Length: 399
Ligand SMILES: *[C@@H]1O[C@H](CO)[C@@H](O)[C@H](O)[C@H]1NC(C)=O
Ligand SMILES: *[C@@H]1O[C@H](CO)[C@@H](O)[C@H](O)[C@H]1NC(C)=O
Ligand SMILES: *[C@@H]1O[C@H](CO)[C@@H](O)[C@H](O)[C@H]1NC(C)=O
Image 1 (cartoon, protein in one colour):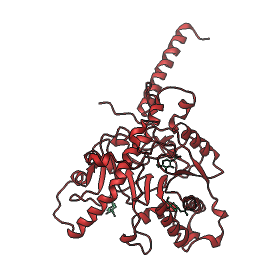
Image 2 (image 1 turned 135 degrees about the vertical axis):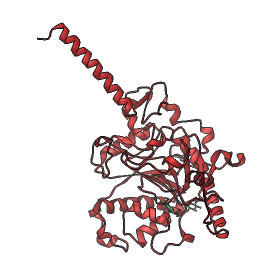
Image 3 (image 1 turned 135 degrees about the horizontal axis):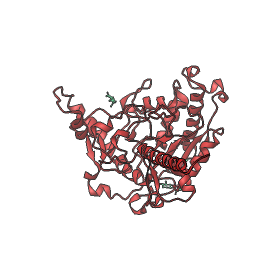
Image 4 (image 1 turned 90 degrees about the vertical axis):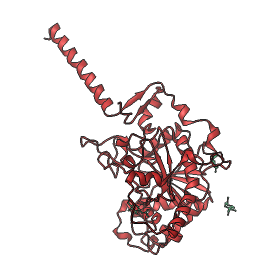
């Protein structure tokens, strides 16, 4: 029998417990902004978007590679796309065993896991689709990709960076031909990084008010979603990177890492907080999201569909972008541009065997999307229920 005083104690304990749980929840960074209308962020003013505000984000098509056996991921992605005003074309994933022995290009494909062989084939099919349909550009996503509600404004800034980067790279290479690397550099890592970068806001207004839409076509691959990337060699006398300052969608420095247990990205220590950097790809990991031009698609299909296949597609693409594949020359290396932090992140879902599993600080599988603050997939439940506000991953640290 519970006496009234027992009940009072019990209620007291319960209310303490709920306060504790609430604190725990905030401690885990699930800040909740109640006054935000997500609609407004998903569709910002079209004026400044230069053709990238449409339902394929300024690319001609968006393909998603999805194994027909992972309907759960297809459902989630279709739902996320519907709340962002994006139209997706699904490309069926491939079972490694279904590929005929004679279909493989030269290379030691037998040493590659079944899963990686299937993934390679699915990426090749997506790339071939770009060629067969004669698309100017296409974005290719894996089915665990996630993004921020503010995707369109992120891509708008990125598109300016993309248009400028090839020119910067060419100038920097030219400079280094005439100037052998000096050995008396005494600059700190931070100084080196800053001097190697041009601020997007310092570019000429004529450039920033350009008329032509989209991302241009002076590139082969835009590596928009990855799980780790290196910066190119610093180039303090002729900058080779573009930095976007005060980007509110960039997580606080202590969250800039591909997995909870991974080391922090160099970005977190050499650039000011909330800086996004656009640069030539160097040792980029995971093919969560990348765009190709028609020219880029042709290069990739030749390189990996015909010429050689001897490692997982993500590693192979990384090598290709670094001119590390067999017989590669710098002269013929593709123009691969990436961004840190990435714009698309890998979503670690609640269940369903992922090949890579996120682990939180307590060693438990984490449900999260690294690098993405206002994650669409983390907010699906709220959106479906029609609730206002957004659950933000890792809120701002309060000083
Ligand atoms: C979106 O914009 C891009 C670039 O202007 C264009 O190539 C593409 O066809 C557009 N997509 C749609 C569905 O209008
Ligand atoms: C492919 O597209 C390009 C550029 O839009 C165009 O010039 C070319 O004629 C097209 N090729 C075919 C076979 O349709
Ligand atoms: C790529 O990054 C590594 C590590 O920071 C660096 O040592 C290397 O020089 C870079 N390579 C290129 C081609 O920029």
